[in-house]
Amino acid sequence: MEFASFILAAQRGYHQSCESVIRNSIEQVVVSEQAGFDTAWFAEHHFNNYSLVPSPLMMVAHCAGVTSTIRLGTAVCVLPLYQPQRLLSEIGFADIVANGRLELGIGSGYQQFEFERFGVNIDEAPAVFSEYLDILLKGLNQNIFEHDGQYENIPPTAISLRTVQKPTPPIWIACGTARMGRSYREGHNLFVTAFHNGLEALSTLREAIEKAAAVEGKNVTDAKISLLRCCYASEDEAEINSYLDNARFQRRLSEALHQRRQQSLDGYLLKETPTQQDMSFATMRRNLPIGSVNRVIDRLLEEIDILKPNQIAIQTQLGDFDQKTMLRQIELWGDKIIPAVNKSLAHKGG
Image (cartoon, rainbow, N blue to C red; front, side, top):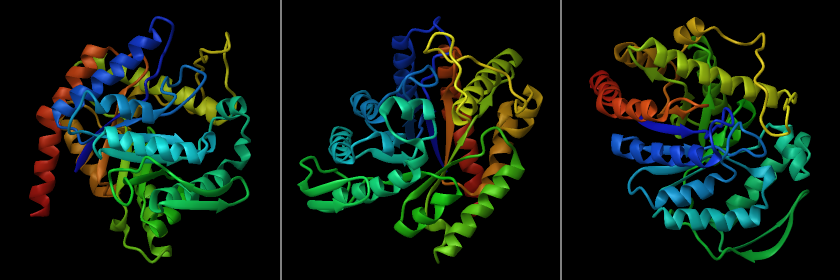
């Protein structure tokens, strides 16, 4: 089982400077590598405090210089907000400076607040995403490519910066059920989440993945699956509650942006508003791998048995959670949780 850290780089309030958020995120990547994590993922968002990473490929390029083994991924590049021609060169550049460690995650985006400020119609995002992925695949696989589509017309074009990984870096698609079929059809990987829901949601998700593979005549194992999950191990109730509070904070903002009801008092800092969808800390603890080390290990093994992912991506950077405490948490995963989970899986497999 692979393990990854997921870096959202959020700013919960003005008591956090943007510089400290980014530097803390980079430090978490370095410690994740030291702890034995396989991958670090970087989000992309714009124009508010939900996430401060405007370009995950810039984070990949920087972190490539302060790490040596951990793979570095985009989770995700929001394709409709890019010129695909330029993105191709940036993908090549990032993979070169990372010495072939780039994991390329892509998605269509969901935040109208961002799209409006780029002058992009969010209602066309799925169609734009589909066409731009066509362009990326052409540019990554062909020395000279051209494209005549609804959104882009590109004459014969050569991309000067080619990726180290051939023919392409691993491609991951942030998947609702609508895109799972294309992932299996074209050999891409799946990036999925059950948010803060429990085992039933994971079971439903697994069923959707199996159905998508079957419809395309593929084996479900033909695509790798990464599960984004909130996880935290501690005997300290205050630590756990702080992590849960920050996880709920992030979900409140994400839901508000997804439902196109972004709220801000000053044009930047989003207002955190409780909703009817809020879960209590007790419910979140029941649903998620959160609690003692043994509880987290046992729950992860349950979830892995249901969803059968290849990777667990742990949300390590949430809101204003204490940085030193999170670094210790990452080390704890490397020392105890990851070895225990993999030992148990190896024993079961044997």
